Image (spheres, rainbow, N blue to C red):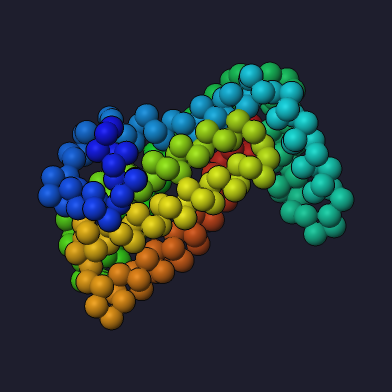
Length: 220
């Protein structure tokens, strides 16, 4: 854990240790991926139980805001109404289905991110070692998972924290592209690489997010 903190404090100096001694897949999954990917789930669980009254109030306000907007997506209103009904009825079977789907998609994130980094990293002349790429993907996502604890409050604070964490995630990948994947900085190849990663990650995350929402809406 100390090495991880040092990486986040000074990634330019400490990310290179991943290239020199990457963690095994089993260590990454057991020590980092599974526990940290559960933090957004824990955030929702606290919001749905301990902070339930505040959560219900914020959902009601959001639904009223959507209904007042003639251009609002009806499927979004339907989705939020199902979440509201689930919490009002304290239907824990549906709550655990919701949390299970969230965790499943959080676990998938580093696989999806690493696949993008691996594919485009090779295109920009980087190292094609999948273990190093997966190390970078998991370590870069940990700040986003920690920010996911803010799901306990359904407010703009949550969106702001996730934005900052996502920005730092891309910064870590940008630094890691040179320090770990050996993508050359000549002709700004590492900068071009991170721009491509950001574009594809945002687009594909939106598609995956729509699928996650559809799955939750169908099962609740």
